[in-house]
Length: 113
Length: 113
Image 1 (spheres, each protein chain N blue to C red):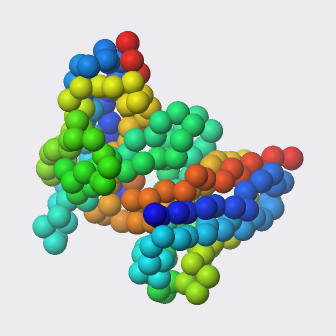
Image 2: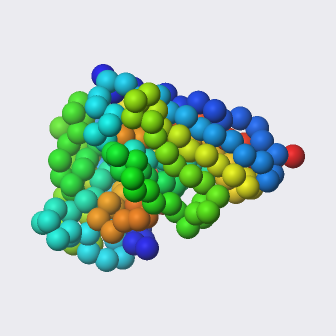
């Protein structure tokens, strides 16, 4: 199974400042069709997960453009350009290239300093 | 608007069974792969099972293989998860998701005597 490793696991950020979360996979996520199936999810306190990014860098509908995804192969990053109070929660990366199983990272808890 | 509404969760004794349902609306259910993902209290997201759009192919996490069965009724726009031989480790909120892009609110399954 592909292991997804996120860092940091805890991320205190000042409002208005940028934030960055790293996600590494135990093997390349490049699929034979040329796509890389790496997604990012946000889970606010008490809510269901919400997908923010799919295929490394494509934003889902309604996701603010302050969220961006990048990376390739085994190294990926989620960036928030200016953190807002509503961004508090846990962020997960997930791979969908080598399935089953689909595998998630451990989660990164973003909090406001 | 995509809507996924899970039901069927509750308290069950170890060794017992439960069937979860997920009522889907707002999209072409019969054309969508569906998944179940679970989250133990205070823990991260874990993929459980997937089924293809026709219901002819499914896959399972090793932890539930042989005990859980995923199915769907495309005429009723409903996804199911039959869970047998439940143990304390199965205690979690179970989410129904459409291709891991849209998620329901989840239903809590508690396995305890």
